[in-house]
View 1 (tube, rainbow, N blue to C red):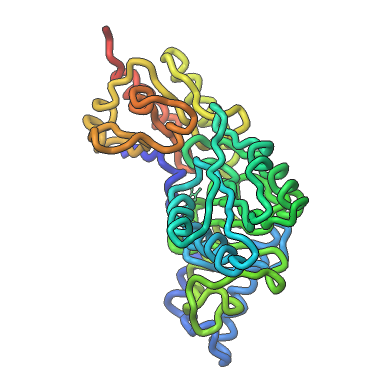
View 2 (view 1 turned 90 degrees about the vertical axis):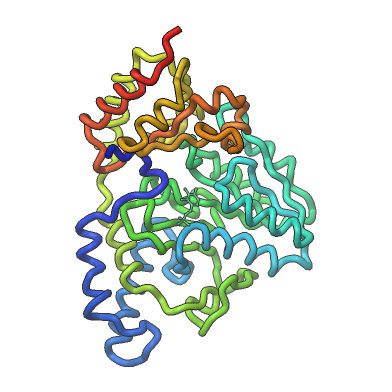
Length: 368
Ligand SMILES: *Cc1c(COP(=O)(O)O)cnc(C)c1O
């Protein structure tokens, strides 16, 4: 089985597994307990919090652990919306956010909020000018992702954040695809809230974090009420093993050069095939979104489905499934969407796998 879907999830690295193990089996006390074993777990959590804060130029106290980027996005958007609804009810986001952001915004619309969905250009870029045009006197939040999960495109969030800062509007970014891969400094990029996830960077599933600038002065309502954990912003017994694993994954990442190599090998091996790159030049190398002329997508996805894990991001087997909202937003029609694939490379991707996948693509071409 060839796995080329690392943007969807990654395996847990062996060293991450080892780092987590004792926190499952030996040091299992509740980190909120005041006894020695509890304090030991709490210390491990605080160390992880510091590592994550250091990675993004934040204070440890500004990091809240959650179950992943989806929950962080919920806390950021619903939390800010509910706490500031007397100030205004308008939110700005984009039409190419991750599905969970769109679902949160649709929920808030049903609850009486208004949402402006800024469209990208044909390269999938959200222009700061368009965000600026969308700002109203009652705008209480702007949320624009950092790296697009289908295209790999890097958004100009520094500029978007700057204009939000100018207007005193909190700026949130979903950084699930960039955290641990790109250098992020929340001050340089003008970020007020940022969602990150463990399982996109070779950590375990079920752990993530939300960065909140000036956390104690920020008006934000919890989504999960509990027994006071995470300064009352996120209830539930803290997942010590997962948090330790998250930290370990962040420390161990060293795949940047390997991914660049794999990416160039793929481009070289696919060069004889007529493809169009979707997205802008400004992208991360681990995600590749291409539309392939003459692709028999049915063949690629059905005949080979037991051999390759790649993302079609669109309707390929069933006519009832809609093409991806991202591909639609950048202007691809149904026919082009059906010939489009997203490949995402990872630490385990090998030259042999790239050779195999490019050969499979070549044998999946229709020859008129
Ligand atoms: C994967 C992903 C999410 C969801 O993250 P979970 O940790 O699985 O909840 C959200 N946003 C983006 C951009 C993602 O790539």
